[in-house]
Length: 248
Length: 116
Image (cartoon, rainbow over all chains, first blue to last red; front, side):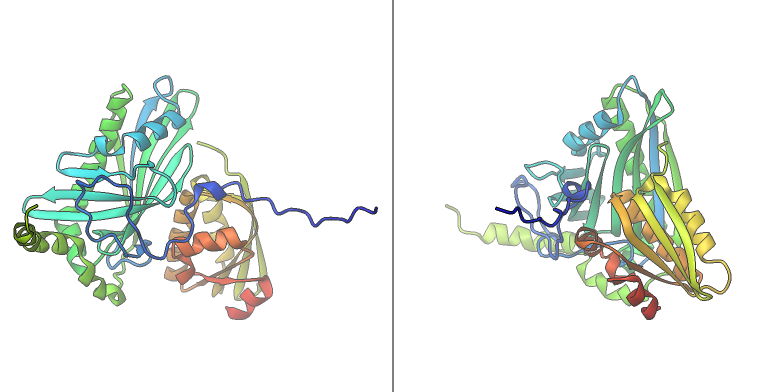
């Protein structure tokens, strides 16, 4: 019998397993029941192109001796112990399956009288980097990429890079007044804690670039999703509901 | 720092449009190469830059970030940005990251050039 010639099989792209599939609306599953899960379920993710405020690129990096950690060790440690490196008052509830493409994590944070419940979608993950994308209502629209690479023979650079626009006019105002500095402190703390967990002192370098000075007034309506307002103002209502619930 | 695993070639099908042919990887390590190609593509009275992704064989999230900053730069210079040659996988990534809402995506060069 004559063998028929088969069309060449299409090879999957090398990065295929690293990316999340298309996600139209977020769905939270497999996070700890103690997480306050608001402002994530059913929300769309936003890129830095969809936010309201000026676009910023913020880069925080720390140099580690390569003898202490390779880029792969830095990233596996970061993924496994992500929430541990955050400052007090901030909790990250990772999905049970860990930081993997397509998974959703929940964030609970408190700052003075303000409370925030929001989340992130893991859009990309490989051995030397991973990236989160934020949902509607998050303080900023955009993504955060955590990465590590080798520099020369002796150094490993661990880095967190944010590309963001504050999500709405209130966040934009807050970002100018104190939010930007708070963001800097948070990621400087995170990188110092990461370096310390790896057994190295960590001096964090910070680089801030305004990528786009324009504000996107067409995105004014995103105000209705503001996660800080919805979490903080909704707290008394949630408390009353809890009290009114019949006890078993 | 790793070397850029990419070659970018700039063509000028007309006075107002440039095409950047991308062969290889788009990662954060190709920033300088991409910036140089964009600067060359934008010389003169160029009103649109078209990215040819037919030769793209790897892209990570750092690469997507570079495309966003390139888009902002192009907008600032009054240039339209379009793309063609993305396979199904990379089209999906443009959808996931919502880049497809800001960059026109076309099946082939003819369509892309006809749109700008």
